[in-house]
Amino acid sequence: MRFTIPVLILVLTIALVGSAIATPPGKNVEYEGGWAGKVIYDGTIHGPDKGMKCPDCHPALFPMKKSPAGTYKKADMIAGKNCGACHNGTKSFAIFTGDFTTCTKCHKPVAPAPAP
Image (tube, rainbow, N blue to C red; front, side, top):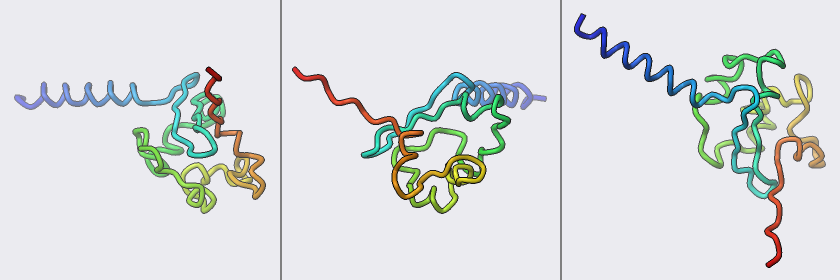
């Protein structure tokens, strides 16, 4: 009985933190995208409205928390890992078609700084 309250507190804390890190529809998460520009992960495009559920990707393809910059590599995605598990040209558009035409679907080029 003396462990009940600390366990409940722990469970509630995990639940609250977990809900704060999720990307619900209408919210975005941004990742560094290297030379091609940052990657915008849109919760609306990857959500329940599109028939997707959190366990479709978490934790098998992605950890529950945002990964550090540089974690996701194009070669891994082409090999069917991470985003490439779905963006393979069958389930969704292919990550890389050999001519860079699909890059801007995810990568948003950084606007140049305004002239002084």
